[in-house]
Image 1 (cartoon, rainbow, N blue to C red):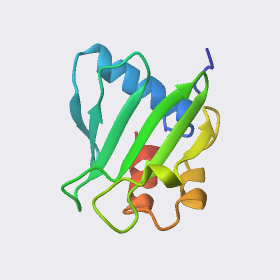
Image 2 (image 1 turned 90 degrees about the vertical axis):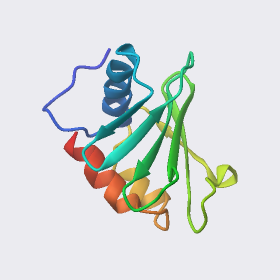
Image 3 (image 1 turned 180 degrees about the vertical axis):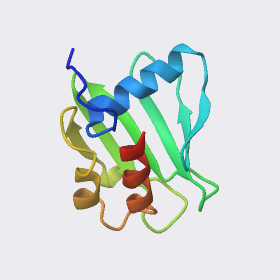
Image 4 (image 1 turned 45 degrees about the vertical axis):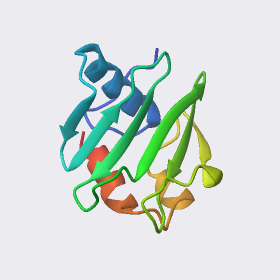
Length: 117
């Protein structure tokens, strides 16, 4: 297991660990900062994030295989566009979401809020 450096979230690993801790308390929904999380009961790490600007989830994360997260976002509608999903290594920076999904709904808000957790 990787040792976490510092208290701020920097990588997908940090995000996964935070969500695992929350799911251990049997919470399927939680609010962290300005983000609302829906955590799925599953044998894999899988969750949606909704921002305060939208009534629907705008980004979905799924751990599809060991150390790989697949991420899909909403760009212009209320539907997460799975056909435009992208895979990230668990050690990738959260900031890479900005490069891959520059037109994602509230992607800047999501990245900045995640980095505060």
